[in-house]
Amino acid sequence: MEKQKLGLPTDRVTIRHVAEHAGVSVAAVSKVLRNAYGVSEALRTKVENAIDLLKYRPSTAARAMRGRTYTVGILVVELTNPFVPVLLEGIDAGLAEANYKAMVGVGRAASKLETSMIESMIDTRMDGLVLIGPQISGSVVAHYAKQIPIVAIAHHEPQATLYDTVNSDDFAGAQMAVEALASRGYSDIAMLSYDRSDSPSSVVAVQREAGYKAAMAATGLEDKTRIIRHPHPSESRTNELAALLSSEDRPRAIFAWSDLDAIPLLAACHELGIDVPGELAVIGYDDCSLAGQPAVSLSSVNQDPLELGARASELLLSRIEGREDAQHVLFPPKVVLRRSV
Image 1 (cartoon, one colour):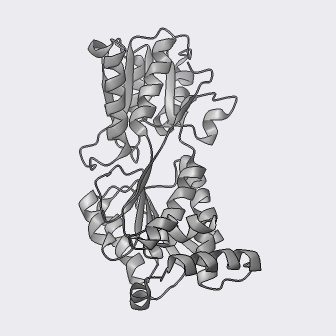
Image 2 (cartoon, rainbow, N blue to C red; image 1 turned 30 degrees about the vertical axis):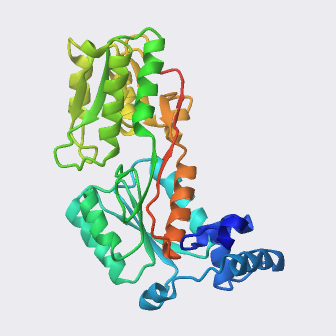
Image 3 (cartoon, one colour; image 1 turned 90 degrees about the vertical axis):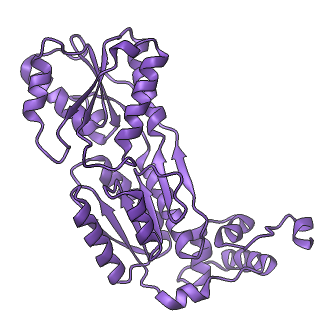
C-alpha cells in the first residue's frame, strides 16, 4: 500500500524500474552496480538513491550460478547484406556503454550451423546472445533462452515468453512500399521474394509478403497480386533475374523483399538496357547505404538499423541483469523515394 501511494512498482523491482526512477539508462545502472570505471559521483548518487527507495536487489542467485564474462555473442545469417554492419554498429555501441564486448558468428542461413554456434557461445560462458535473422524456429530459440539471455532481431515471434524480439514493422513497411507505387499510377505490381521452403515462419519475408498482399487488396489490385520466388539469397540468382526481365509478362513495377534482390535487379536492368523507372519501377527494403548512392538511387523502405541495434543491446543488458518478462518491440519504418520509381 505504501508503494502505491508513492507511485512505486508493487511487483518485483527490476533494473529497468531503477533506471526509470533515476532518469538514466539501464546501462548506467549496470555500471554503478558493478562499480565500473568512470562513473560520476552525481550518477552514482542518483542510482543509489533509486535503489534504496525501490529496495532493488539484483538477481544474485543467477549471477552466482553463471558468473560474468562481459562478453555477448552475436549470430548473423550472413555479412554480405550491407544492412547488417550498420545494425552491428548499433548493437556494439549499446554494449560498449556497459563495458561489454561482442563476438560475431556467421550462421550462413544453415540451421544446424546456427545451433552449433549458439551451443559454442553458451559453452564459452557468454553472458547473452543477439540473434540476427535466425533461420531456426522460435521453439528452438526458446530452448536456448532457458540457458542464456537472448534477444532476436528480424525474427517475428511476438508470442515468445522466454526471449525478446526487436523488429521493423515489416508488414506495415511492405504495405507502404506498395502504396508508394500505386500512388504513382502503377497497377501491375509484383513482389520479388525467395523460396522459403526451408525457412521458419518467423522470418521477415513472411511479414513482408503478407503486407504486400494486404496492400494489393486494399488498393483494389488483388487480381494482380503476384509473388515471384527466386532461390534463397545465399544462392546465385543471376539467371532467374535475367529470365524475369526478359519474360513477356514482366510486371510494370516490382517490390523486392530486400535490397539484396533490388540492387542486383537494377544492375540486371542496366545490363539489358531496360529503363528504370520508364519501363520498370523498383522499390526495395532496408534502405542500405548502396541504395542512396547517386549511381544506384534505389527507392527503399528504411528501418533504422542503428536504432534497432541499440534497442536490442538495451534489452539484452536488462535480461542479463535479471529481467524475465518478454518484450517485443516494433519500430515504424518509412519509405525513402528515389529515381527508381
